[in-house]
Length: 357
Image (cartoon, rainbow, N blue to C red; front, side, top):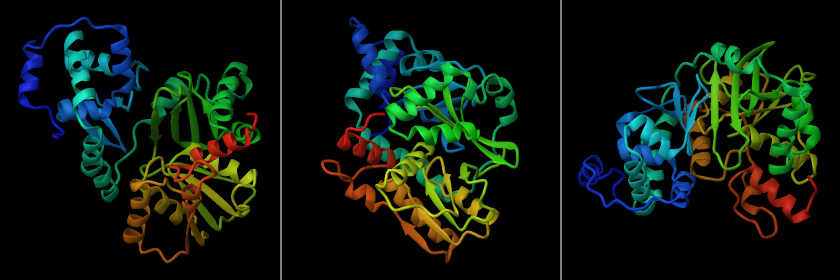
């Protein structure tokens, strides 16, 4: 099946030649919930998008970042769902937007779209050089300084603990530690923020939505090739590095270790999130911490995670010993095998043990 709309479909929509039907609230909710917005926009008008900093943005309005479920204007904080996006940024009427989204949802192969996007964008970026970061200073001044570290705000704390501990099963003491050490916060838009420092200066903020129904992620950096870094302040020289694709997986892994589900972790290790599958940040960390003697890959149990490991080896020709932890995801727990990531494994253990959160 084609990953582009046929010209007949485009003309049908633009000339309003489709059959007008009653549009129910149920249908609109279904389209907004189940349409992958990135796939939808790549299918409908690929030229309207740019792919940079490991994310899609609208070409005409590059401050608008496209996620799986919404478009987010990171200057104004305004979000639009799939139907609203087609109306706001593509000048479609409400019936046209519903027709396009419904046609996509019911007639376009999502597997074909996923493969196309991986081949044309994600896979190519894994080979490509990185790009400069965006204006993090503006972001820090505009929406983070109001509630950068909400450790003293009860309402913000409740939201952080509810999402990470109850929804994601992450250890409460670990979350408290990250909050107190200012690795973790909640911004004025109720987005989790993971902070990376150079000395006392924030050089990267990894944002993640706490609404389970919305897949929202954003990486804001002052320096290119920067992800999330965590390491004990008492360790002067790190000897090992554990590599993850997301901050939530990093926290999940530490929780699994604390609960004894994986081997005890070394005291002189640091932990990084690539915030994706590209390994440029790992290369940067190895240059900044030349005392590191061993790499532990804890990437996702999928094609992108496996490819990241392969590309790192081929690009760097690193002679450092490498450990691969994905067998734990493959083995899983009773009734849950071949899991995608570390949070899935953690949640499987929580379900198996019926642990209170």
